[in-house]
Image (cartoon, rainbow, N blue to C red; front, side):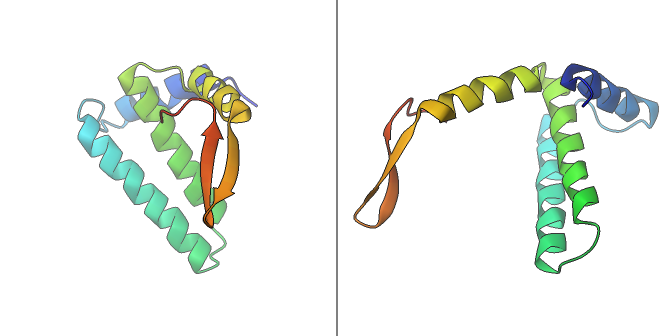
Amino acid sequence: MEDWKKLQKEVYQNKLDHHFNVTDVHLEFCHLYGEVAEAHAAYHKRKPDLGEELADVAIYLLGLAEILGFDLEEQVVRKMEINRKRRYQVVDGVLKRIEGEQHG
């Protein structure tokens, strides 16, 4: 797989090359939500373009990370380590976190 940092830069450059938004963060979140909705619809309707819709979600997420100055690969690796340490238990029929960091 390509380096995530490189992909972030390529996604951002593509936005610049096509004069897409790179300044309105709220708009980018709206586009990301829209792409997630399209992916869900493709899944729900068993459409053959689900993989392409998931790719659009990833592209918008990489672009947003670049706009905001986050190394998404670094953040994912860090968050996965946090998630590995968490423990869960069913309490009164509900799965609840019982160990690990409690934020986000």
